Every structure is written in C-alpha cells, then in structure tokens.
Length: 191
Image (cartoon, rainbow, N blue to C red; front, side, top):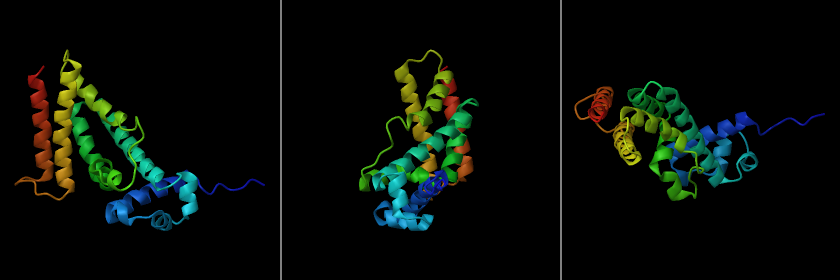
C-alpha cells in the first residue's frame, strides 16, 4: 500500500502564504517557524521537510513573490508601458504583504535571506523591453537609465499608497493615472 503524500504542493503553498501574511502583520522578528506551522495547520516538521529552515522558507517566500509579480508583468508586457505600470500597481495592491517583503528589506535585516539568484530578473525584463521599444536605437545604458526612472516613479507611488500616505489632494487612482500618462509622454519625446 502506498504511503499518502503529507507534505504536498498545497501545504507548501499554504506555508508560503501564511509566512508572508504573519510577517507582514507581526514583523519578521516576531514570527517563528512554530507560529507559521501552527497557523498553517501543520507541524514544524513539514516546514523543515519542505524548505529546510526559516531562512530557506523566507527565501522561498521572496522567490514566490517575484515569480507571481513577474507573471503579471509578462502578461501585461505586450500591451506596452502603460499596461505594465497598471499591472505593477494592481499586483502590489492585491499582494501588499508580499510587495512589502520583496521591496521593504525587512526580511534580510532580520534573517539571512535574499531572493535566489535569477529570481528577480524576469519581473523587470518586460519593463526593459517596453522602454527599448519606446526608445528605438537607444544605447543599453540609456535604456537602463530610463528603466530606473520609470520604475522609481511607479514604485514610489505604489509604496506611498500602500503606506497610507495622502495623495496630495488627488485620489491615488488619479495620481497614478497622471504619472503613467506623463511617463508615456516623456518617453515619446525621446523617440
């Protein structure tokens, strides 16, 4: 008789989601493997079996976040720069815990974990492609510089919104729409 699989993909997914949620709510220093396992309805043995330990679990949380974010960016990429910007915000607002962990730096300051090498690049590749398409003939360093400008603008607005900052007399929807349009106009001036 075959032994049932106890530590399956569903449990792995539940542990990743639980870890992100608890860390977002309580802070990484306050969250233990025991609390993650208990909240997910399993044991620490499952965490060790599936991930190896806390640092490995948290690395997997980061990798999972970047994979999900990359998928949303890749899906929007064919529609151009504006669609990428809107997908960025939509993903962040739908996954605020992961967004904070991925870009807030709180994990690495408490536990020795960073995304696996290569895990982040697919999430920024669609932006590089969209900027390159908007700036035909531009040198690689010009494209990289403009990617930094665009990403900084989009990321900054989303981070402020998630932090609960006031939108300076606008709604966040209106502020974000204005920024996306201005980015598109600015890039159009360079072509």
